[in-house]
Length: 149
Image (cartoon, rainbow, N blue to C red; front, side):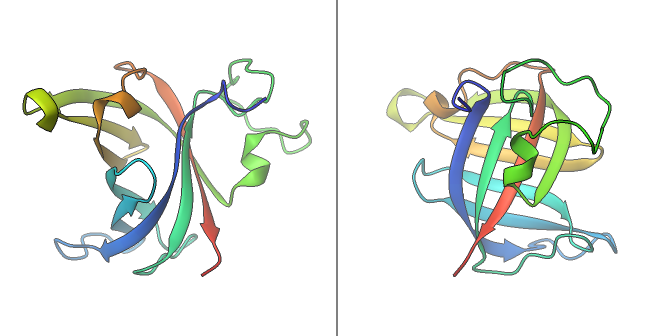
């Protein structure tokens, strides 16, 4: 049921936090590596409401909508609304893909997907086959749930 709305999902492990130094009080940049798709990710998160540490393991998904039936999101949050994909995660952001690119050639080609979630940025890098179905200016939900160590 959720397979058609989840565009990407994998388990990541945090390798570094703020590799270039802390820039903001309430946000930090995590650097993480996926376990199944061999993707690397830099992601800004609000560490005041969702703290993360080095070696934390988490599931990260990118979805086109939170509605299980695939209907587009209205843009308004309604707590009394029916169950949706966000109920299965602890941290959710909504944003827009602003850059898609590829580097290299032949077997060493790497795709890069950039998104902004209200100024919190994400860069996802890796095999182009994992991000080929994304489109520039596409609106996406980023969903995270920590996995017990």
